[in-house]
Image 1: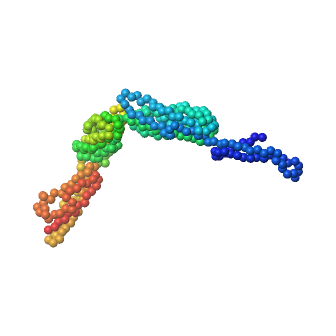
Image 2: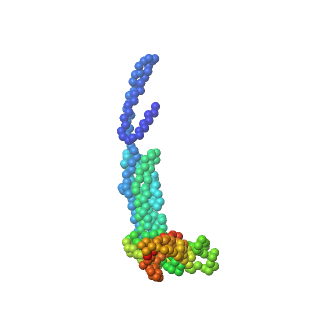
Image 3: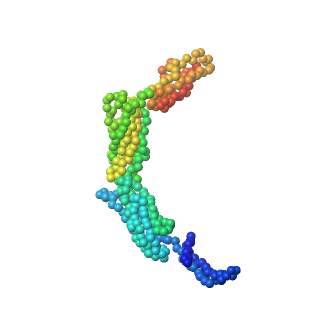
Length: 349
């Protein structure tokens, strides 16, 4: 007969079994064979010379971005042979992919990292090297880490919205570039050919070409950067001035690229619009009638900003014959686009 043993946990196992004989009907069983089964049960186990494999690539002039490698030693911690398979997720790889490990034996694994996997982009990567066993579900792992450093900048915004300004005027906004790397950075600004001009006036919002046969101005006459090119030392910052020149009654969207020499490109969305200020007054004359000398009369004036651009207002009483008789609740202010402002006019004899 065949005797099989199975255990869910490692350790030293002992099991006694007895073979008995029955010699007749109603007879008692008589032991004819006694035996003890023993076994030492082991979990497969690998140890590694390092629990973490780290790479750091810093770009240098003339560097072609060759693969980086490191060796680690793995040891079979059990007195049983094991067949082990190894794999690592890109941009890492490991060789060999399989080892026949003798009892208490060792093997060498070579871990390779490709620093050019994501182009010339600064990256921090975390993956795992996984080890599995033939015939057993247990797995082992080693942390894989890598850092790639190219010249790069951090831009404090991804979109520059100039809002709506008066026709034929300009607006400037500040952009901050910061060099977070240990390499000097040389940058250049470019305006891409991907832009759009739309005529916006009243209820109209259509492509400019439908209402104007003349070619729109070059995009570099609408948006500009100063300085257009420059350099930033490691850890330093620089403020860039972005300018929008308002094309009459036109909304413009465009994309700018901040191109880093020997590094990546960073895109920046640009938006701007120009329009005429328009407003409407709820009334233009005030008749307070007869007012007792010891009382005051009030009336209300509403200023409606009917345009697309914010407007500022000022109340000037100097043209009145008796300006000290009139008081206004608010002498100056700013009314956002499509909004209104109520003023109280008080006449005091």
